[in-house]
Length: 237
Length: 278
Image 1 (tube, chains in turn brown, yellow):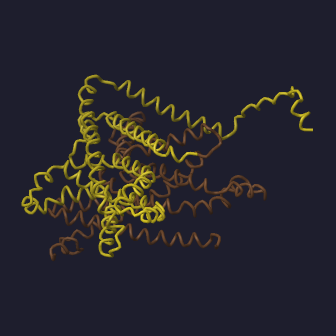
Image 2 (cartoon, chains in turn cyan, red; image 1 turned 180 degrees about the horizontal axis):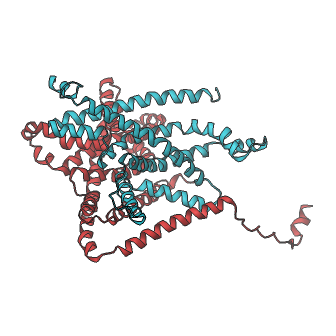
């Protein structure tokens, strides 16, 4: 027990600092992916309920493809594919050095694409929960398409979509662990290195699991706060 | 008045023809996006066609097939084991005993709150610390192999998810169903098996399908602990040939697998809800 605390601590021979930096990487990756996924997901959802069939087809294909692929495979395809693609472009331009893709950016992009394909479904069902009269009311008082969307629909949409998006955030937080496979020094990578060096695999991977649990608890605390804040502006019943 | 209307000759005026569909902005954007997808898919087909090398394909196609069989076998086995394991967990979750309920809740919370990949690593690398104990009870023979470690991790993980699905489905059946059966003098066990479960399974079917698909996608991570499933052989092929089509073929196979499952599930849902359609 004494030894375990020393191994996990921040003192001499302790792995505390490197694990803490891993936590920072995991959290910042998840936070950086969130806006990417939300924005793409919102526009894909808009496309899915468009009256124009070709827009619907294109949006549905996006969801079908990125929801059907394993996240790990998407990550590898983005990571290696981008590497090869940029390398070929570089050769065309005349640059012959090796191209290295930042694994943080690759992870952000791959996870963002996966997140957005799920988020588009959440947004779509929220759109369907908003009565048509809300749009008509907006147009009736002379708001443009964009204004109606921004000032009438979006505030209600966010409130309806919040529980679904909170769920997706939890999934995203867990999916960031996959990025350790392409070499990003997140929680799992750092604890893995520590486990290999010290031969205390159960201790370190158990610690990793506990950190993820703590992150989930902290997130649900924040999500509760956001939901209370969103509910305040709703109609009191 | 009505009489004359019915006997009146049919009007000769025709409906005006539909106005021509104009090239609105959404239509242009939509056609552009579809064209982009089409170009991407055609590009993929063309790339795979030009990169087609009978020697490479002949060498790696059998291993992809073996990998696919490993993936399906692993997922099937862990879904079935997880379904069996989920029953005691559900009983614990629904139990009136505080201690049992909180143990079951803790189990579910742990396995749903941590990444599957961390659980797999914890079992594969971590169980080595308990080697003497595991040897003593004779489980080491299994758990020193990556495949069994993956099976254990997946079963424990999916048991937690399936327990929540089953619990939600059981609670969605109205209490009156229990009371109705009780008033007929039917025992609790028979009520559960013949009245509650058939209704609960209709609710649970779709989430179960999602869980199977999530497991298939999640199973790709066993490639990281040296199990040669579809993803494992893909990584092997890529590391030997440095040919990107290794990953593209895997993506196509996974996509087909998931789409087949999705359609099978749609068909199953239509079939078992026939009696609900009016």
